[in-house]
Image 1 (cartoon, rainbow, N blue to C red):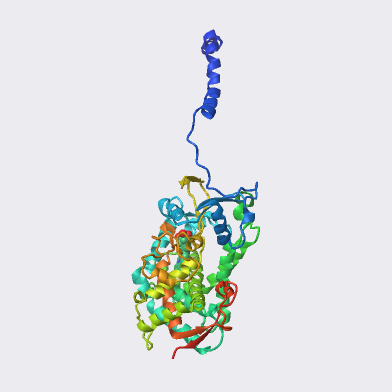
Image 2 (cartoon, protein in one colour; image 1 turned 30 degrees about the vertical axis):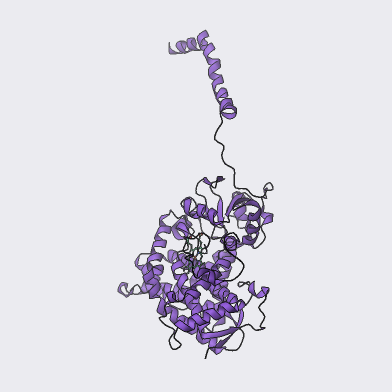
Length: 498
Ligand code: HEM
């Protein structure tokens, strides 16, 4: 009975006259929506060089990418986009563009593009690593622990005795080599690395005079930094490459990590075996164990803190020495300031805040030579409008703080080393002045900033106060100013101050 009703309905002439318009409706809708209704136009990607199919614009990026990106931004503007293989790269190169990325849209850009060379799965990254999303629980936890235990004003002040001890060892080893050309790299490195190792687990990891240990640990850090920053096809073609490691960078990183964890493996074991009451929160390791951190979590956190903190701190100190030796007027002014405030008999307890010229020298070095010239890559967690351009979800976003620090629109005589520019200025690198961003800004700002901002001028004060410095061949030329600290030794002659 029901079937015959349906048949009746389908074959009735009224149904047939209705059916045709009904079937045409979707087609009509498609035509009207596509061609007749004016939809709001999606703004384009930021301007940039025309990409080749599949290859994109990889060929335009020379090895020093912050320099080549700065050149390109002169053509394409303060917010530009490039295609790297299949990936979209967006680069901000002016203070206004940096404000958009790191302040106005901070939440959107607070995720990271994790380099393929990081030898962790996605879930390990979220569970174990600083590379994790800024909205993840682990990231918030480790940032909070580091803030409370390492970088609060109280914790930084409490580290001062340790800094003095390591600075005294550094100056002692230089005195022993007085009058000869000393490679400053390992000397400053040993002081910095031992400060960090003691803050984390209360042991030195290199002897001041022990060049082999020093070069081994430097090799670890350098190896990891190189693996992370080398151009990697897996970053440009993630869909094709997947887990495959085309340049062996992930393998290299993993091998170095495992060797590096060996530096503290014994201490972690001993602490775990010690009575619970013996853990007296002497250092970060005690805190982590008492909070139930696993060895895996401790290893990753220590590795990442050391990798992020040591080379940046050491290179800022060495780079300041290069600038001071190239600018004798600045060196003289700094020595005069130090000699009027510090006490020859005891280099302890001097107030850093009473040394404005020293602070200005550090700011000037970080303006010209930010150790992370493009920050670390941020990632757009959703499609977003920036300066009337579309930044698509998943885009890798860089801020060229090196280019901003040398922009003649922002800075007078930008290539000159002139610490004086900071003397009557409130400009600082704490993430509020977007002309000076060596530590970044916003949620992802460097967590180590409060410590770096003190330990760098502290160790410099000891070096510059204790010695008169000269160069082996007495020539300061462009090549010396452009010294690549990662590659060449920095040879200087110390003469103790009488
Ligand atoms: C002169 C010294 C230093 C400079 C110039 C520096 C600079 C930076 C920069 C630019 C970033 C990335 C910010 C961004 O992507 O927006 C960063 C991240 C980081 N820094 Fe530093 N840093 C220094 C010292 C330190 C120290 C002493 C530590 C710790 C011991 C440290 C630990 C970290 C960590 C863990 C991150 C990753 C944070 C995250 O992704 O959430 N840094 N640093």
